[in-house]
Amino acid sequence: MTLVIAVLIVVAVVAFVAGVRAKDVPAPEPPSPTAHLEEKKTRIYENLRDLQFEFRVGKLSDEDYQRTKLGLQRELAGVLSEIDQILGKQPAPAKPVAPAPNPLVCPHCGAKFDKALKFCGECGKTMAIEADA
Image (tube, rainbow, N blue to C red):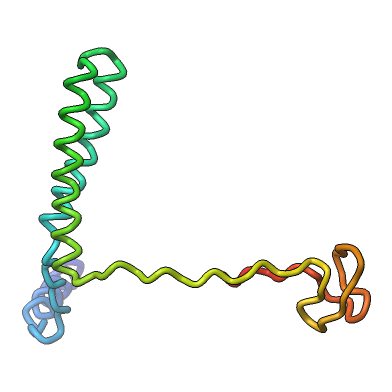
């Protein structure tokens, strides 16, 4: 009896696996066009970290450290610019800076006061404007 149940379970599992259709399987994640550059960027950062450690330990002279660091930084700048070109990124435009709120004027009702207050004496709301997250 146990043998019959085990055989039925095995047959059911095999039938299920064989019955999976290609359209039921999720599509593989497309390869990233910048994956190799991201790996290279990571290696350069690791090399910079190792270089700094070796300099602090005293294995490198200041001249060797500066020369090697400059070379790695140039290589990193090239990799970052390639990534930006591939992704089509443009530098983000500078956001306009909002003028600082006047602590003597309520931002909610416009009431004016002689000294800075935590809460408005007219509407009771806080005088400070919360930053939008």
